[in-house]
Length: 72
Image 1: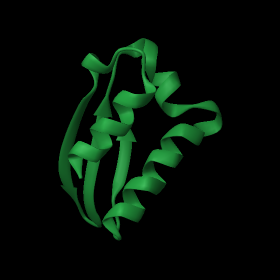
Image 2 (image 1 turned 120 degrees about the vertical axis):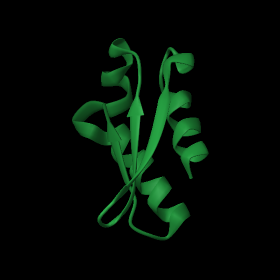
Image 3 (image 1 turned 60 degrees about the vertical axis):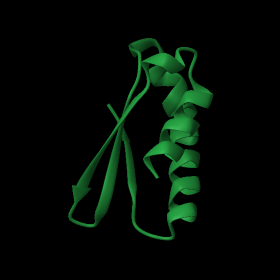
């Protein structure tokens, strides 16, 4: 799942080499933290959070479970 999150994040940003994904266990399932270059944070989040919300939807559908994706 980490690979999917990383792939989707790298597809959106201008500096894909700066994308890092960290997986941690939360109370309700895995949490994926995406770090990127400061200039790419806005691009990853998107207007009104549409891009990151789309990434979350794809990952949750693929996993068929409770997964969180957060931007740092």
